[in-house]
Amino acid sequence: MANDFLTPDVIARQALATLYENLVMVPLIHTDHSANFTGPQKVGNTVNIRKPAVLTASEFNRATGIVLQDVDEDSIPISLNKIADVSVSVTSEELALDIQSFDDQVLTPATEALGQHIDRAIITEMKTNTVQVAGITPAGFEWDKPEVLIEAGRLLDIRKVPASLRHAVTGPTTKAKWLSSDLLKHADKSGTTEALRRGSIGRDLFGIDAYQTQNIVQPAVSPASGQPTTEVGIAFHQSAFALVTAPMEVPPSAYGSVQSYNGVSIRVVQDYDITKKRTIISLDVLYGTKTIDADRAVLLKGANAA
Image (tube, rainbow, N blue to C red; front, side, top):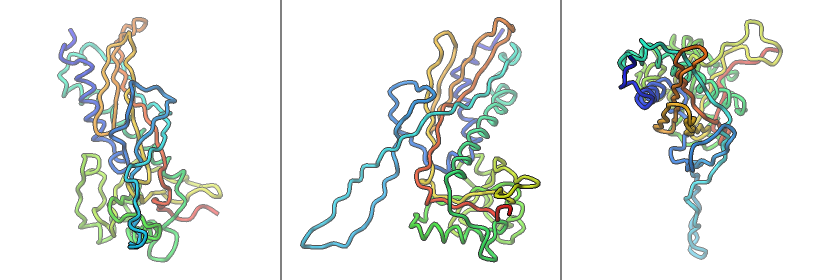
């Protein structure tokens, strides 16, 4: 008999916690925690999220007085155009497990897959819209040296990007090359979530916190003209890119739950497939990504193939 305690509410809460721990990119970018959803959202809906406010200083003129600025944050539209889904069939024995064992056997693999999918979508958004490049020149600041972050920082400084909340994300090949530097062999490794702690390369490297993710793709063995010859990482300010996830409705005929935490929402639906005589558990996340300001990001890469 199935464990009565292992309800969709319990599964969804555990799945959300495990998913959040497996997300590398989400804690590094802008997520709007106060999006005003009037109810469950559907794929294709557009929602407005708050854009971080940017204020400027002006020279005071006694004759004209102060210059007032609106501190209200602007809104930007984001299309909820993607659903990340992992659906699995489970046995009555698996449903009879306690939540920790069920997490180990089912939820952890499922949420790892969801996390990787969402992280890849964020990285694709970043690479598609970022124009500035560091890592090709000048000599000594190439992509395979941590000093490339000095050049990336210079480009961000020219764009007047705030010095705080700067991050860099690289792939496994770049990490391996960077770790040969004495600078990183003794770097402090820590972070704010489990995924960040595991992926951290170093804190405050030339003013940038650097992380590694396996979701940075490797270059082709024989890249065609114009294709990357190296991994393509990215340095960016937290306000450069945004992610929004939204709750979805539980189908009327299904047994499910929706849980949200810190800008991430997940739906878990449990149903019985009478044609195959098995129980299906589906985990999905409705989300959208958006480039807020491409000038606040720099690609970290070598030259493209000639």
